[in-house]
Image 1 (tube, rainbow over the protein chains, first blue to last red):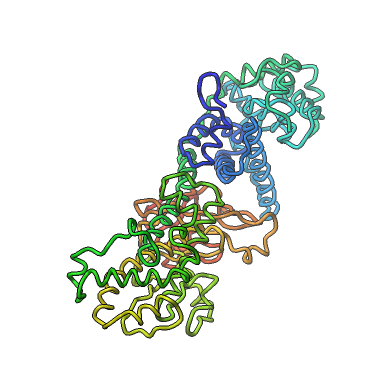
Image 2 (image 1 turned 60 degrees about the horizontal axis):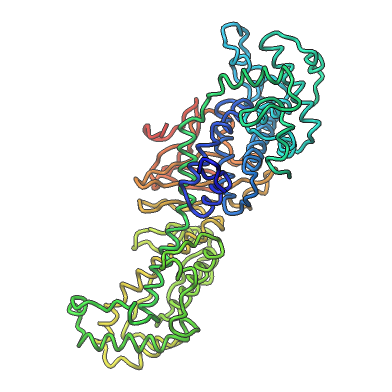
Length: 196
Length: 381
């Protein structure tokens, strides 16, 4: 189950960790921590993303002994990540409903409200544009960007179907490009009515 | 679910790990180029440290239990039933400190006890008394699956029962959640007493003076009754001096065995039952797991609160994730979300009351203006 460069694959590492090999977990974490972090961070503020990052990996730790190696570690990992982020969204929504909080949602950075985008890099503008996407589109974009999963797998992770994911990505990417570069693609107009 | 490799041709664009997609458009290519230029953001080191610590902690959790079980077997063998090769004889110096006639008489008495107590203590033939998991632990083999742990726990439980049966007089039960009301004598009916008793067994390394597991002593003057060991002791002891000598030699080992067993019980029960730990000064505790009490969560909606974990480091500081159970989840203080999440406190300063964490001094840990109002500046941030 090792890859061509003799590095153990994710499944092997997960199984090894389930058998008590701490180093295996360290390797797994090193491989994927930045991807899960960026996936969470693009959808949540920093504190919430830190919570999510922790929740994702603690969940994985909890499930170490029950993991079945079927070559789908990344699907497994990003399913945990997706669920953690959805939980955070729901938690914040409930909290705001309960206390009548008028602050921006917890996953929206204060900086996102700053109007002077010209001073920011294109990437920074892209980040902010991603945050303004509808949550389902944003989730699809970030899964696509960070997980390396196929459309089918993204559909599985999100509990959707392939066609819906394709649609979300098309609308989202068109909208992002329009916001960052001011270039209106043919589809970007339709993105305003993008589905969630 | 599909395999991760079976739909790569459907991947849109050039993701970080994917190839050019069949449905690639200019928007997708634009996104991939731009995103890959600057997706260098890294997971924060602070978060990494927490997660790696948690992972290591979970992995280590099993080993102390197995090691404890291994030592326990040796101790059990000394007391009850062990091949000669495993039995560590009392040293000459130990015997010299007692008023025993000879070492031979002590050994003979031990052997007699072993023979007499075999059926009661093991229910099986000699050499077959150790649980498989413990055998593996001794032999150094990996024993990581839950079944093996359950075996070890079951064996420990059996050993505990045997130990109680072997005591000449009824010994106080270890004050666990399940047995406190069954203990000999007047059971502590009031809630406070039960909580105290539970707490005393939650902390495995409590000082001996406060430990709830009071080890039965072998006393020469104790009446024979109720079990094979006691009967044999009474029948075979020619005089009080000899019996006292044996007691002095073996009692410390019995105590050690019981102490280890109590610790094993804590390891196994803490993750399954809802028991708040009591403060402890002992720095040898590796980890305490506190599971939310379900009854206290009845009023919450959602999926219930997950386990709260308190990690006590080797330097006796406690890495505490401060959360409150709200709407079925453990959360930070909702008023101030941006407090640092981890503190370092002395275990003795911590009290857990229901779902709230408090300082021993009675002051709530509160998040104010982005900081916890803990004593001094002991925040780990």
